[in-house]
Image (cartoon, rainbow, N blue to C red; front, top):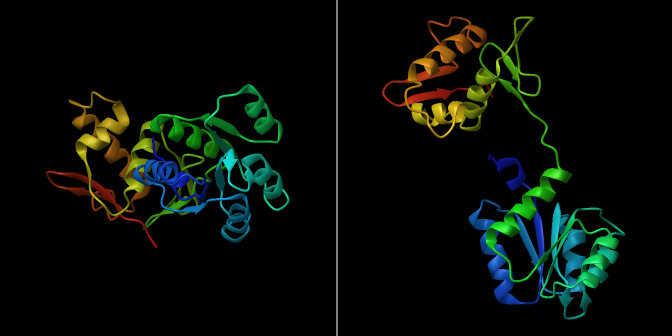
Length: 233
């Protein structure tokens, strides 16, 4: 699944245990999150929360000058961002206290990296919806949210396969996407034997997006490798 939109979100980690802080930081950065801020106490968490304006907070329950519940209560005076609690104790009282205060999720230590990532992605997807952008090409505009091409006052619908193919190319705008990668995006884990079908989809897309489909300027064939999509800045 493409997580590039969620990877733009700023995450605040609040924990006073250096080893755990480093572990969570590594799990997130290794998976593509680059915008991460840290704090080690309630006081620091409030300051970082105010100044950095994160999109998600991951708070340890046990902190040196209070606890994560106190930090969340104080943060709620200036932000309503989603919050996930980390705790060493998988106790119902703690869980109910956190969720009762409005926490979005709760993870008991020790945890597997995949579990942490699944919880983080689930909360971010629930709270932040990606607006499908309009993609401008040389002679048309593509609206992915409507699966439509607008060209010279005409609106042309895209099929599901055409939509997936263009979306895959758009995510790699200006870069070559191999035939195998495109076939896998369209037909799943067994993409072999679909090259002719892919070529047919490319021809139909060019009829919809190019001024002259026989001389494409937007959807380009890279012989022996695959295709690339050139957008208009």
